[in-house]
Length: 512
Image 1 (cartoon, one colour):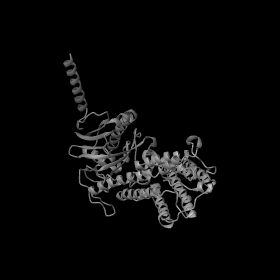
Image 2 (cartoon, rainbow, N blue to C red):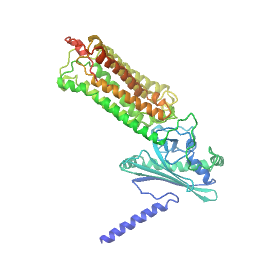
Image 3 (cartoon, rainbow, N blue to C red):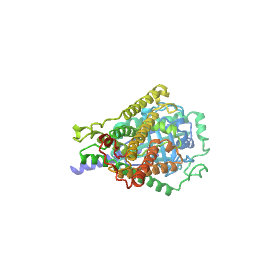
Image 4 (cartoon, rainbow, N blue to C red):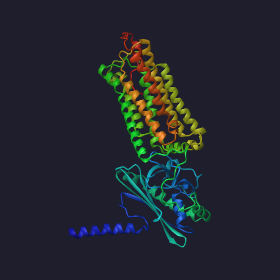
């Protein structure tokens, strides 16, 4: 009985696999994965070369493709390559619509922002002789593997069969299956129908044959780049990527560690005396804005689309996950510091004069009003309610959040420098957070400059003004503090601070 059951199950599996393979004419056999999206359609009044050129002419995808609205061949460091022909080992950056847009479409057809997704891929196969093109999700991850194959077959009599399939595997594939499976299937079908609609039009078919490359696009080595485009040795590029990652996590560690001396000191002393409440008040606002800013650049399809529109030569932002993690961690630490001023929560000694100053209170509310003012401008003056990046757009709100962060960083350091100057001493104030600040500032700027230089596009700096500004402001003030501590007031014992008001004006040495 057991043998019969096992044999039946084995036969069923083999029949299922054979059936799945039989439905494709030219696609290679692969493991079924968690789920797949696919399409299969016959295109008439066309040729093999016309379909091949259409599929490999990435710059013109928007002319016909309701699924992939933007496609660019890049290096692994997001350098837009001068030669946009597909080459195995090169990367692709896509902006897609899930589900796809209704047909017909052209390059002027607007995207639906709520359906916009982004994808980075690695080209794995360019097989003109077999009519096959493939890429896979990049960078590789044990959490998700997604491999897409497209194939065309000449059936004769002006008919070409187009087939496409993407197989999703790994734990995250179950999440994608539950949220996007139906939309992905509609998008694959939409792309197939887009090819058919475009090429069965006689004029478009002729244009596809005599396309940008004037001949079938076949696998080739990248052509020499124009002098204005920076070319990078692949080994150097890989090394630079590794250095960038190391710098990113190094500055994250340095800046994150600099948060801890002040709350630990408060806890050990059971007191907040010596720390101006203005400092954490500004920090809470600044880090809340910075967290929202980095999260939006990383995870918001709308913001990523608008950034790509304004920076077409380097459509991926220079914001990294370690930037977001640093911001979120900082926000939590700032809230903890601020909460230590509430006697009922911690039981600490809090000075009677430890209240938010009028100046800082005004700055705080001024920043909040400015943010809402930009939101109103985007809604009123923006094109399509801020969805179109040509005018006032939601990305401008995110930039405003970043500028608020920069303002709070600049203002919060001034009181400590002034108090050190008035006392002619740094006694009772720790220099170690400033040293960590200084190291983190240089590491942050180094990562930003390496990323932007390797992209051959310094808009990575102007497009990420918060990170650039944070590093510079931090370095300037840390130099001032180090000069005060190690040079100007090195041998000054300092006056005993008896006056409560002056004591409470001391700003804790804590990182932004």
